Amino acid sequence: MLVVASAAVVVVLVASGSSDADSSTVSHRALATREAGRLIAAVRIPGEVATAASEPESADAVAGLSRATGPVTVGHSGAWSVSRSAAAVRAFLDAHPPPGTHLAPGASLTFVPIHGPAGLASASLALTVVATGPRSSAVHAEALVRWLVARSPAELVPSGAHELEITRGPMGHAPSLLIGVSAPTQIARIRTLLDRLAPVQPGRVYHCPAQFAQVPVVSFLFRTGGPRSRVLAVATEQADVRSPTTACDAIHFTVGGHALTPLLGGYRLLRQVSALLGRRLWTPPYAA
Image 1: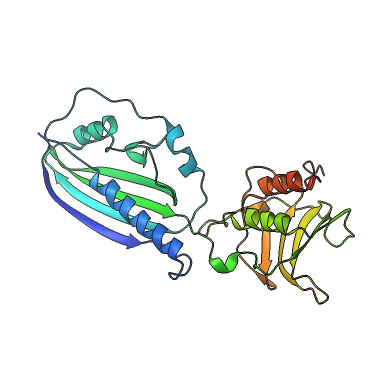
Image 2 (image 1 turned 60 degrees about the vertical axis):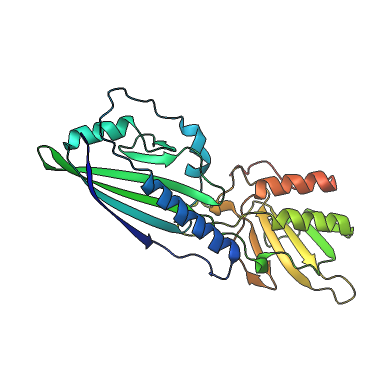
């Protein structure tokens, strides 16, 4: 018989992200806290050891979670004393993942959700079993859930943009392509496409390859329009950006001259705007 004698749960905020005033961030953090608690609550050590092993689920179900970049994290932990040998407990947990999870590929007693809630970047449940006697053991569980930091309303293209200038060319050189956009519907559509892009998430160190000065850059300059037209926002992206984009080739975005969090999705943006305007903005990958 496997009998749980005691349990304890601890909640820890591992890292901090954007301001708590951002309602989306607060909502995602609360979601991460609930998910971490759910993972700990899913740990069950029943009264009998099952003899039939169950097959782990496919890793494809959580592929979207494992690919996400590293944002802020919430951690929950739990500890139990069990009147059964450590080997028996490990064997049971290996064969019977906590409900709603499956074993992470290549990891021992580490489980990930089969379906992760939107707004989260990743979630995992790591179990450790230690022998405390011939027929007794201790189980420690740690759930780590990372949530996605959303863009603040201040990180959008200002609504007063009535003119748009798009250029393409190497930085510091005259552009090889210049497009002026004045149609309100087209400007509004491009603003919407840019405003919907996700920001690069905090909490991860990136090692980026060298950038070549010859690579053309596409720039979007949003202006007020009129005789005293001034620049409200600027977005720049490498014309040869590949998919999927990362922090290494993210869109540089400024509003009122202030640099904001870089944005992901430049590969798709360039193709969407190209289709909208009937002019190809992107270029094939640069070959040094």
